[in-house]
Image (cartoon, rainbow, N blue to C red; front, side, top):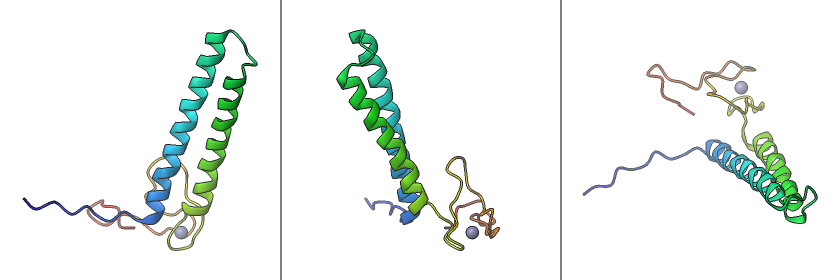
Length: 104
Ligand SMILES: [Zn+2]
């Protein structure tokens, strides 16, 4: 049985996805940090603090990756971090073809 070839993912899309995983990880770390501090009843719990710092690092990484990798392929200006990006707000380049597929 022939395997359906996966459409090759563009590097900037890949990095955008990785950045989202990092952000989700950061949210998970914050949740765990809050749960640990509630469970131990200690607001200065060392594990909770470390998880909190790790979460902050994740958020910084999320912005960092997007600043470096999530850019318009035409004018290389940064793109919006959230929501579908249908065109570039700087050079007005459209990222959709007539069928509504992403073409970049
Ligand atoms: Zn552009």
